[in-house]
Length: 570
Image (cartoon, rainbow, N blue to C red; front, side, top):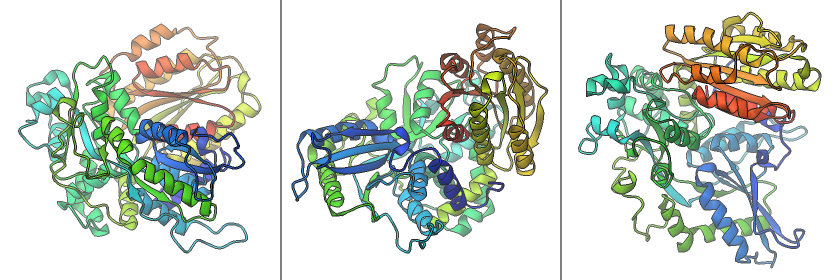
């Protein structure tokens, strides 16, 4: 993927990567089963691919539905299988054929349009023809939750909350002001830092940049491609994106890390109201509570549609069974349980009550201005604009080439690194660092749009030999990257390290590294991938947490997808 022009090619290309790493219908190993019948051969299996934000509620309801003994009109028991994943990730899997769900329930109806757009535009299957009809009907909402800006309560109060309505423009003024939070009487808070998910993978990220575009265009409905292309919209979008700490695939990840790491990590994050409400039930070390800001320029409902797909693998029995589960979810007990978990019921007869209240950081009278989701072609245009305007990244990719990587481990790691480099944007920069028992000289930095092929070639030419000096490699790479980060604040700076083993030859120690990483003012994050059975993922997780990044674990079968997941942070 040498270029990044157009969101549809991205969806199809990522779908192809996704398809290479999991068997059709598996849902990337995220599937859970509820109500499995004793005679599975007689059961009607219904796979529901859904946005992970409603996992707790859907898990409970699928279990209760199974225990109810529900059957189809033909008398067959119903087996519900849940595949929890990001809404964009699900689109990619369905389009590629890697996942064949009977029901698609993304976080927002925006992804219904994107799925149909990608489905109708995908290449014809071998020996077949291209699809001529959409795969997903509009569906019915099962729960609701507005998209909000979650902010630490004292920071919101410093901006005038709750007496003053706060919007994107207020955040830009704090972020772009030379004094930062000092202009509001709090120099100790430093710069304004924002987080939202990657809009090509996650619903909240897509709706974030859509809300930014509406604010820049000064509209609440009818956003057009011309609006997206206008100088005012592009300038506003770029201004907000400049405040980003990093991106990611999971809205829940930002909620969790914001609460775990506190205000020094992130001033605010684009979340769902239900996650703000849920934060009051979680015991954390956070010094303050978070509150929901409903941007004065307007926001969106995350409407969680339930769409039974019009696909060849959805037969009459599957359709009937999926309909039965939908009716169960719409029934009053399920809707009241959704309210208890912080969602707003899709059933309008159920009054909004606690915990959606001020005591849990929410305002049941909001949102006052609801924005309109534009057609899929406008969303595609917006994603293309975002790729040009997003905060670029400077990544130091640190790869283990020790002797234990010989053979298949090296081939799989190289395949993963290729996928990672292919997923980065043209304006991003990459520095390659190989290590075994010694740390090799850095290669780069290279601008990805100009040197993507050269970077991939260097990865493919790596030879595995020697021991493992993991700590020295991380320490050296971190120090080099930190010097660049301090001199180039307009980028997301990160070190990404892959290793399959334990440290054997370093002078540095883990404690020394973690003390170095604990400097919260450092404009650099560390992300780690533990590869294979020998890798000590607890060590890598410790380093990543100290450096306010994230860690993932990969196997020979999953390493490409793990690298792809890692790329979503940038």
